[in-house]
Image (tube, rainbow, N blue to C red; front, top):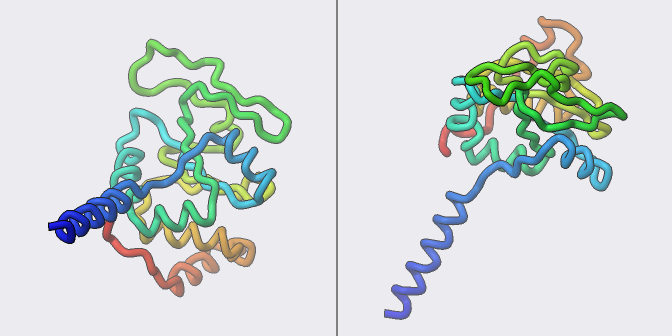
Length: 183
């Protein structure tokens, strides 16, 4: 009987650990502080509360075990509401959303930080180097396999060798996915 109870306890613990696996999101300010102590690239999910593809990204892509593991290991992951009120202190400037209307439903004013990053659509996946310099935003929804290409391209710094749309096409065609579809 003790063996059965012990086996069930181990099984439940293992299942809860797997279910509890998630991206360790932080604010941009927290990521910038973390970078000062241990340099690592920043991966930002710039979303809005009304955006359907943003919700699909959370449900389908950011719940994937391979995506979770890779982002947590190689990046400081930031969740940023591009129409929210969070103040971001970046490169000596304070970015806010002075036109935010708390009574407004749906779309709201774009945050100054989103504007500075030249975000034009949601979701946008934004990459920063180890010194918090903007590498660039990637607009649109991505599956785990589509996101894998960008995650690895920026971590491995292959993006520095890609100088044309044709070079990116060649890179994409040669890229071998390792992420699975499973959650």
